[in-house]
Image (cartoon, rainbow, N blue to C red; front, side, top):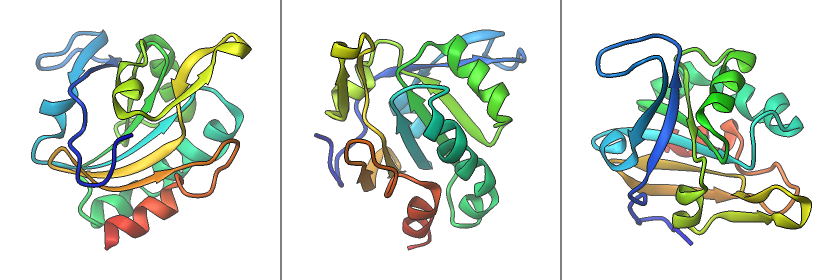
Length: 168
């Protein structure tokens, strides 16, 4: 399992873009984790899946609500990573009104979750390998803090906990 001091694993996530921009087309676009995290402080939180009740009611809204506080604490970007495809993450971003505050990144094959060792095996429920619920503060690609939830819990991966760690 990834731990404080480790580098984020080399992986490619997908981000759905609603607007064509410099270097990105409308639709899914690859995000090289190593390149995207270089030189930045990132508040990263991961969830088992989009549109789940706790994640939609508490998790994502908490990070959106505290966006300005994270920026004041020196966080450059907020990332939400989930084992879904980019189209689902794009739809969830619209539903949650994340705008440009939270990057909704798809880990469609669970490669990132597997590389971190933070997986949740839901194959017996027909959902395959998912990401565990966790949050981490990442500085220049290295894990500065890590908060992993216990099964069925929502206690340490919330925006308040990670924000307190970002403030130091």
